[in-house]
Length: 511
Image (tube, rainbow, N blue to C red):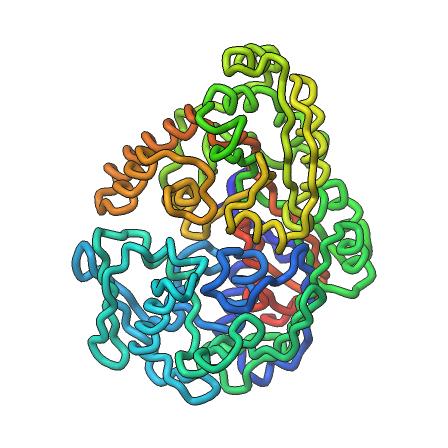
């Protein structure tokens, strides 16, 4: 399955769907916003409303995209489009210039101007902020205000993927942020304002009456946090929510048979794996043992038995074909328990070992079931697995603060669709890195800073080959993006984790 093949929910809308969404975005007026409210059921909860303090797209940044503007955005067609910046260009190998939309102000009157952009970037880079997204911008050397609507971002080395990365960088008001709790409050220039935030329960947004951009179609949007898959599906079938993500593939047919709803799956950009903690025993300094684990799990069995054939086995890298830098020459480890046992003997563990495995709850598609299957297959080669299921925010806290167990079930995707974004999580200095490989870091940094596309591809090829050999993870598969939707709502399906009200419309509203 290829993610760039956009799929639509309505058979009758078919190929016209994307055109309808585009024309809707161009013609909607503020008066149309009162047509209908929207309720979305998400599998995880929002940890923070501060977009500088989270790198989690499907919840935190997804909500932030409704409340705040970014310089650029990525539309349902996966192409970059203007947001707060009307246009952007590279004026030199190390300089990107952004021309801002004039006259945009925050609700308190502060201007979203070049000074505000400069403040936001410097806030993220400041050590005292402890911003989770700081690694995205460590190449930024300085931000220069040219005039009120023109800002230059200067990097210490070429950063060709910077505009793509900025599609995930949302802009806060400087003065307001200094005086308020940005984790629990929000004041942005996005199409929606925050109405109510009940942690672990729901968040409600209301459309701005005087939004400077294209008016959103829905007057009120509520995101309900529903970690239990069965509860999420029941809510959709009962008409309590209009859209849900991460439904088991086995429920797609039932969702389609239910009157008033439809279900489907598209290929996602997310690769799933078991991440090894290579800072502790038994994986520290033992690449052979880590490779042994890769032969012990039957990935095709999991795809066929749990996901009805949706998804693809990862080819010894954390990238899918959608990414610049994907290495087509690598092959997946075959299921070969005898080879796994043989490598374990060579690695110094002929009698196996005990393994603590963390599995986050309410985040990844059927993560609990996958954790159980993987544990059972590892047991067959002598690995005694103890699973700990952890609530998502607690799991994140452990991951960010060097508290990961010996292994964890984990998935990565990156909206820039560039290898540097995903593979940065294995780079020295990243808060989620649990390996020690300075050579890998050096190769990756050289690739990320080159403006020569062929050179970057060659360096990413070297980096992925090194990762395949050192096996810091047990490579599993690309997770399908599954969803269910009310027949009253239209949405152009995308597999990159964004579930934005701005990409949805009332069925037939563009007729």
